[in-house]
Image (cartoon, rainbow, N blue to C red; front, side):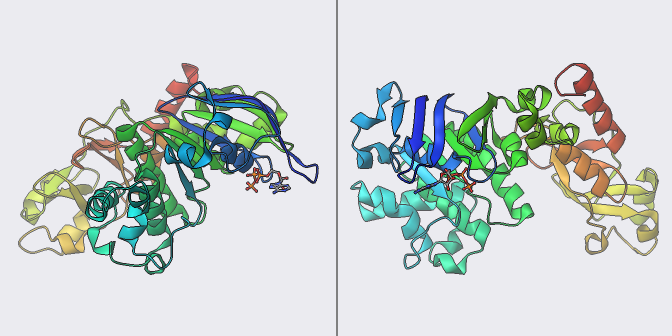
Length: 378
Ligand SMILES: Nc1ncnc2c1ncn2[C@@H]1O[C@H](COP(=O)(O)OP(=O)(O)OP(=O)(O)O)[C@@H](O)[C@H]1O
């Protein structure tokens, strides 16, 4: 647990970056600091690992005043991930990840094998181990940054706008990956962003800061959306908050309808019989979706359903995390329905197998139900 008690930071030029902050970061949760530029998010974050010392007030880590800890020792238990990853350009990816274990006295071989495990954990192929950071994409570099921060297995992870410099699709992917990692690792994560959508998606609790370094509201994402404390929070959270709410309502439990499926390699005549409203999902042996096929497309196929010719449109969403996956949100479900050529979003389970489909109407009525039960604002 990290406790800020009346913490103020005044820089030498008189700027009050953080003003009397009282806040408790819970263990094993993701706490997000969000707010407009210059509101003191980064300063607050860096006070946790003593990169910056408060002017007044106290920060306790597991009940102990951090001023009593030697900064290098303190930082061994606190991973730190920043934008652009901050990797060493002249070291390979593997050696970048192995840096911290090596520094803490682990032998080179053990450090490298631990680094290889971590690369796998954050979804980086082992073929990238020997590359240098400049030979990776921005998203891959961020993954290396996360792997490196996890290398010492710190209980606390500080992340300062780690995903801001990558495009929205990669960003979404990195966010999902972080949630997946967190469901396995249970770290105490403090995450800084200026993006309220990111805050709502990732945060178990969200601290909204206003300029002048004051805490405007500290709540769960749903409480923030349902009961913004004042006009500032309300306008920061935004007018389209009903749509935002879709992002944190999980798709688990949404009524999933049947979806027509045909096997790759089936005879076109047989596939034709299976179509519903002119479309079916083509699946592989494990029932995983490969794409859509229509009556028109089938008429161009001779002997069997040709997987090369399928219509690939439509994202997928996960409804069941029992097989180790992460359940998607209602927003994922709506995106899946709207982007599907058949107007049906494909729901998959944790193994990626098709369990059914939903229309946009189903998603919107699930949202309406959540509204009437008071889970999200109307
Ligand atoms: N070393 C410094 N000296 C003087 N003022 C500083 C210093 N570092 C930050 N500040 C000021 O303190 C305030 C808070 O800065 P901080 O970086 O914590 O904000 P932030 O919310 O993280 O902003 P951003 O989202 O733009 O990174 C700003 O007004 C900033 O200009």
